[in-house]
Every structure is written in structure tokens, then in C-alpha cells.
Image (cartoon, rainbow, N blue to C red; front, top):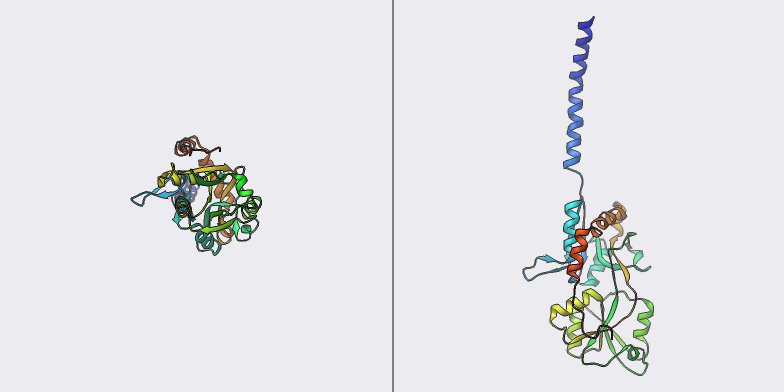
Length: 272
């Protein structure tokens, strides 16, 4: 009887071996071959956040952030640089998965999905020539005729837009911020609308920091997002993705890099 029980036990163990092997193999497969969360982001060149150096290698704060995100999670991110208006259209049409640096608006929420967590905050500024005496009162003066450039499809709050377009002021759209600053330097326009860190960094990179000044801060900081296409958001949890990015964003390692990268020397007359 004892021998029979031992034989039955051994037979049972032998039958279990293939099942145990399958369980172990499945666990290894799950660990080694877990599905990546991959998406492509469209963005204009926005130093110091994301841009290409002279050798066409990606640089900037966002490049560092996404490098750390990829090394610490299952997220893989590809970035393509293009003008803002085209980037917006590509994401709207579902040809690209996400847009970097999108402010929220009800109009855009019809074709973009905003996660609960923003990636950063910006302020809107007006840039002028250093040798001009234009101030905010001139922008509000209905008797003056100023030409103000803004990047095509750049979102502006309603109060600021109304202020710019009142009286005889003329607002024109340009492809990118660099083009607007070159026009400003050549006195073809009077003012340029831009964002704080991006605008100041680009002006410094272009060598115009002695010629271009910040006129005034126009608004409080507003959040900007990685906004996803409707198609991508229908298949992925974008809030979960953003939470993983936020963990790296808030880490000491990244925050030290951020502070180092954003130590941009103030333009003259910044608080004019």
C-alpha cells in the first residue's frame, strides 16, 4: 500500500512538471516581453525644452525628461519637430499621437484629449526692440497703429487677444518665433507675442539679447499639456501615462537638471 501511494505521488509530481514549467515560462515572458507604451509627439523647436544641436542631435530639458522616463518605465517616446500649426493639424487628424505644449481650450478639446496633469507652466510675454519706447499703454491706445506678430495657431486668452486687436492694431501670424524676432529686429513689426523661457532662450541663441527686450508679463502662469489625439486616447489610458511621466518630472534628479537648464540670463528691461 505504501509503495502504491509513493508511486501515485511520484506520478502526480511528474504530471505537475510541465505545468510548473509553463507557469515559470509565462512569468519570464511577462517580465521580459511586457508590452511597451509607445507614442509619437509633435513639437516645434523650443529651446531650452526641446531642439536639435548643430549635429542634429536632440537636446533640452524635455529630451532629458523623456530619456529618464524611458529608462524608468515601460514608456517609449518618439519626437518629431515641425511648425506649431502643422503639429496641431497632424495630431488633430490622428497622424501623430500627441502634441507637446498645448494649452487647454474648449475648442481644442473637441479633437484633443488632455490628461489631468500638465507637463509644465508658461507665461505669455510681449517682446519689443530695446531702442523702442513702446509700453502696454501704447498697445491699449486706440490712436496708435501697432503691428504685432504671433506664431500661427498659437492660443491666446480672450482678454489679451481683445487688447491686441483693439483700435488700429494689426495682428499677423508667422510660421515660428524665430521668424517673428527677425522681423522685429528689422523693424518690419512692432511687437512679438511669445512664452517666457522659450522666447528668452531663442533670443539668446539668435544673438539678439542686446537688441530685443521683454516689455511686460501679460498673465499668470498657465498650464500646458501633452495633449493626445482622440484615436490614441481611445486605446490608451493617457492619465496613467502622464502619472508615470510626472513621477520622473518631480524627482530630485530631474528637478536639478531643470533648474540648471532654465538659468537663463534675464533680458534687459524685463520688468519694465
